[in-house]
Amino acid sequence: MSQIIKQIQPSGILDSTKAGQFRDEVSALVQSGADTILIDLKDVTFIDSSGLGALVAALKTVRSAGGKLLICSINEQVRMLFELTSMDRVFEVLSSREEFERQLNSD
Image (cartoon, helix red, strand yellow):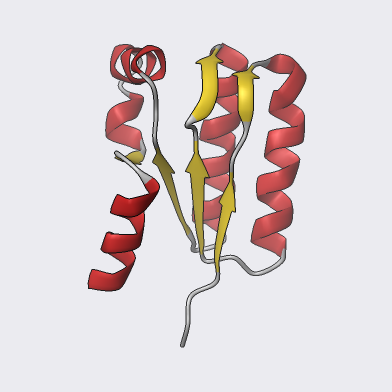
């Protein structure tokens, strides 16, 4: 059975103004049958607590549907935030979209 893989690539600042839209986008992908969702953060410059909350909510949504959520291409600021909040242990963070493709092909 083939996996349904969807990608989201937010940009700019992931904060309270974008958090709701982001959560809705993830929910819509889960409802459309996505098994694996990759969130590519290469164009995200900053994440605040609302953005972090949206990522955690997205993870819960995907997991409760039996899916898998991965994050790739985080910048230094986002990496520091993830480490300070221990989110680097909660999320599977890949260095790039290429690493994600390699991981898919090795499964």
